[in-house]
Each structure stands twice: as structure tokens, then as C-alpha cells.
Amino acid sequence: MMFEHKSVLLEETLENLKVRQDGIYVDGTLGGGGHAAAVLARLKEGRLIGMDQDQDAIRAASERLAPFGEKAVIVRSNYEAMAQVLDSLELQKVDGIYLDLGVSSYQLDTPGRGFTYRDKDAPLDMRMDQRNQRTAADLINTCQEDELCRILRDYGEERFARRIARNIVQARQTKPFETAGELVEVIRRSIPMKMQAEGGHPAKRTFQAIRIELNQELAVLEHSIDTMIERLKPKGRLCIITFHSLEDRIVKNRFRDNEKPCICPPRLPVCVCGRVSRGRVVTRKPVVPTSEELRENTRAKSAKLRVFERAE
Image (cartoon, rainbow, N blue to C red):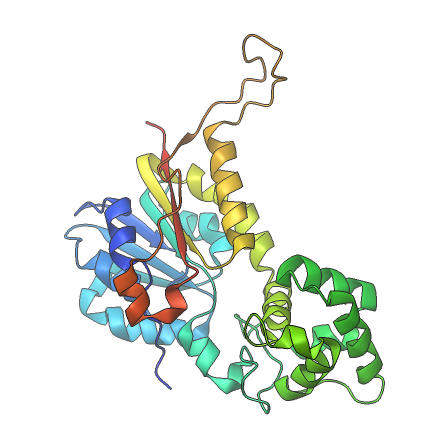
């Protein structure tokens, strides 16, 4: 299967990056290279560093971006290691960084990757970086009930987290989980039929939660934003596209804290903590897809773009 992922909020991202012909930009979630190709097309003397932990994405993007020659530098790595990657390229600061978070269409539509709950025979894998040893099956078959409940509640916002966790633990005593179908069956038994008729597929929230926990998606995002802002040149911009409320909340809060880092008590007339603003939030409200984009790509419906600009 071709690595396909329709670039979401592409024009809006390009507009907010304010791409310069001689600028240096970092794509922290390269995927199939859609956003990267659009940025590279605007560069002359500039460069783009594309990062992704998925080998299939690296392979597809390398082919797509080959016509841009040395302007495109592709690195297999999680964006969590962006500072180290830039150091290895002897780049202290860059003009812009962007992330397009979430799962690609390729990952969702390839049963062997295990991200989908729609193919009952799909293995419970869900690794974004297949160099990692632990799979979703390992997580499901070893986590204690309380930990499973926390994962489903915190990362899936699942109302029936306790019931699902309890039934998973009971079922795996007979046979360890191996396929998506086995997990979906337990989830269906755990959620009242009336509730299953509402809000889409009953396994959606559980699969999201397990994927986030396995790949440490929210922890990586939260720990990386400050570093990415630090590596921006004055007036450089960080653009982040999220696809669910948990990601968006992290981005919103980290941007706010970088804009207004003061921790002094409100009663103090002047700041004494010494914390200095690192820039400004460009998007007071997130940028969302147009109705036209939503007609062309239904998977874009939950996308939100937020932008931060480094201080001069």
C-alpha cells in the first residue's frame, strides 16, 4: 500500500509559517511528505529537515522529496530528539517548526500496523516506531486493571473504562489478546447497547487510548514544546496541528505558559520571579479546516492549528 496521508490545513500552515526562500525549517512528523513538499517548493537557498520515527514514512517521503535534492534532509527519529538532530547538523536555530500529529491514513488503513479496529484479524501492534519491542498486545496482556482503567479514562475519555478494563483482565486469563477482533469483542460486551448506538464505533476511544499510551504521544508532546520554541530564531514560528482535545489542551497550555511565564502571586505589584516571555501566541483561537476541505477529507474534521511566534 502507498503511504498516503492527505495534508490537513496545508495552506493555513504555510501561511502561518511565513516561509522564507532562504529559511531553515523542521517537519517533526514527516509522514508521506505532503507538508514538506509544499514548504520545499517555496525554498531556494533554504533547507528542510524532515523527521519521522516510522520507517514506512521515511521510505515514502524520501521518494517524494528526492527531486528537491540536498534541500531536503531526512532523519528517522522521534521529534522528541529534535535538539539532538539539529545539533548533529550543526544547526543552533531554525526559522520554523511544524507538527502534524496523530495517525496517518496509511497507518490506519494498513491492517498489519494494528491501528485499526475495523479489521478483526489485524494484529494488536500500534507501534509508530517498529524498532520498539513493546506492542499494544503486550500492553493489554500485562497491565493491571487499575492501570488499564487509567489509560482508557485519561487518554480515551472512555465512560466505561472500569468495565472494559475488568473484562479485558478476565478475558486474557483464558487466552492472551492477539487481534483487534478479540479486543473489539470484549469492548462491545462492556458497553451497553444503547450507548453503542451513539458516538461512532464503540472501540474508537479504547484504541486511541492504547495507542497514545504505547507511543507516549502526549508525554512526548508536552516535553518537547519548550525545546522547540527555544530552537526558533527571533520571529520564528512553531505550528502544531492536533486531532483531539487532549493534544490541543497541551499545546494551548504550553503556548500560554511560554507567552506569560510569570509565576508571581497576583497580589505583587511587579514581577520578581524573573521569568521572561519567550514570544507570543499568534492564534488566540485555533485555526480549523474550511468547509471545502472537510468535504474533500472527512478525517480533517477534528483538526486544529495553533501557532507560536518566538520573541525578537
